[in-house]
Image 1 (cartoon, rainbow, N blue to C red):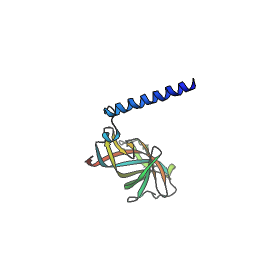
Image 2 (cartoon, rainbow, N blue to C red; image 1 turned 45 degrees about the horizontal axis):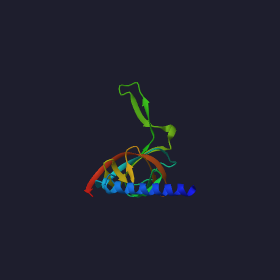
Image 3 (tube, rainbow, N blue to C red; image 1 turned 30 degrees about the vertical axis):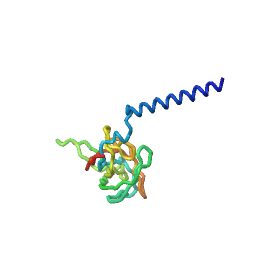
Image 4 (tube, rainbow, N blue to C red; image 1 turned 60 degrees about the vertical axis):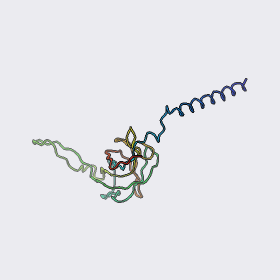
Length: 166
């Protein structure tokens, strides 16, 4: 009886393989290379919220490279083309016509917000840009890593620069 079960599983596997082969041959299933419409150079911003540093100097610098991980999968090192380094701020209400004032939060003097702009080439599909096999979209978590830092943030902006067909 055990031999009959094994034979049935083998036959079912062969039938499934033939079925998948027929569907693929008839191009009913689109492969990844057919979904790529173009290749484009992109820039995207990574927003690092509430980074705690005991120094008032940003460890991320323009012109250096940063290694990124997308969804805990290491990708590559990218060129840093812009950095905004800001102390954490707070909005305080006022009894004036303006209604509020924005000031540095003295209660969080070692806390900073950092926006890092990086650049890379991406494959453009119907669903958006693909970098390192992962779609890059605003709000997606991403990790930046250098010699002295490893920060996790999220993609906050994207720009497509030059597009070439593929």
